[in-house]
Image (tube, rainbow, N blue to C red):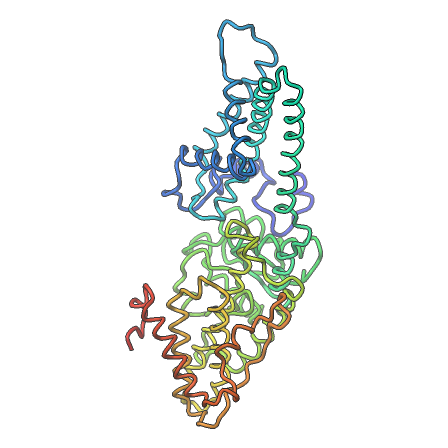
Length: 504
């Protein structure tokens, strides 16, 4: 590793392994904590006994195909491998079995004592469970031994029983293989390829992309490094940039100014995010984008810049007083989302029934919905701020309403969010109050930019309550009725009383 890093230094590599001290630091994973999985707050993480219980439950359910007989084999196998008679002659077979039991117990106790990922998070649980492959292999040996011991007792002096057992032994692995193949077949899984392309494709040429999400970083890095897709974009991992060793990587990023050794919450030998943006904003001319959230709060950055939703990422824009033109923003970002959904045209978003909260694929749909929500609320906020300035805000209001209604229809988390219902209610009220409409005016047409996503048209749920000329009511009356429904739902939600405009 040190030789390769010295001969072929490249962007995106973790740690400074070119020195002995840096190599040892990297080898011991000191950035995360030696022999630990998680660098975040693990004060409420589960203890060793609870983690061991989770492993046993997983072994008896998922790993055993929910067959209690297999778990019984495991218990019998473990019991038979434990020391029985101290006077019995030690053999290679007995010694090997004791080594297996000792290895299993050692791994379970040591790993579960050191592992600190909070298992209450479904994705963290899935990550943690990947480290059960080693004890599972040992457990499968114990299952085989238990199966052998019970079967030899069962079939003794009975040829018919032996034949029945042979059939059962053949069917059990076939059942497991069939079940496992269906669960593990990812031959058609192109979700992260689509996701990474949907992030990169809309960005202007020679942009700077700062990433703080693992799944975004790894998928984008693969496309850029291995397939050469949009390698004109410079991608930097914000987490990597926060370690002191990042100072050794500066020379790899031509054209980028680092006003210190590494990214820190306050200035010193390092630099804050606002200082980094100040040093590079002019050179990139509004071509700096951020994926994910910042690593540290930065009040100076919040005063000088804003993060505007731009597809699946946010664009860094200076607060120059006037702010971006909302009509230009609507047109520009709608074009971006056309490109985003073009990436998902073939496969659609990950199926929530297959990709549960324990999978990384589940986070893709979460990020798409959250990004759509951010764009809709930003557009709504911009439109309201321009109200009364002789600007046509109604098309933007209508588009924001359509997107918010779609998100409430498709995403359970956002549907139960008081913030979404509040914003949706305010948008409907703006239509009721609009001076751009009269009793005979039609509602502005909202373009369907989502067509072709999956097997079902994305905007189909909108048809059941969206205004049409055939409905026989003017759009202000329709908007008033929808406001009454949505605002009532908002007032009944837990946590709604903590938001502005509650009760108005």
